[in-house]
Image (cartoon, rainbow, N blue to C red):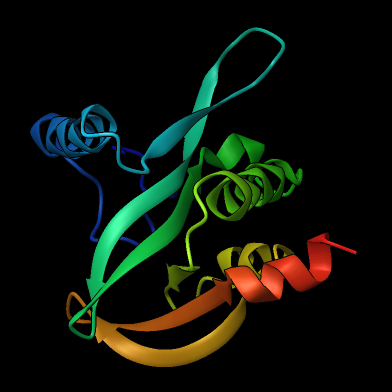
Length: 150
């Protein structure tokens, strides 16, 4: 989270303390049995290259479950985060039976938008989130079932 490219469409690079606070929050969700984040690890060598999973967000005064993802720039454009996000989406609907998921994407983050679209999400609305213009992509369990249960 100290990498400028990794954090380009976020609030900027994080200090070690800010990173620890994010990790503590994620671990607290995990301990509480709530949907949480997963490490994205390269199978050969076991190197940590990012994360993909669930964030608990309040968007326009509504509680939402976000599929959020970040990947180290050295691994961009290889389909890895699309694969991870698709697995997280399937876990959300198949195993957790969530009614819907969203992704919050900066309007200029075309790569992240493509990932959301590839896993079946569509632009639902534009809003202001944490002071920034944000595109809200969404997918419902019903929409997912139409594509995955034949």
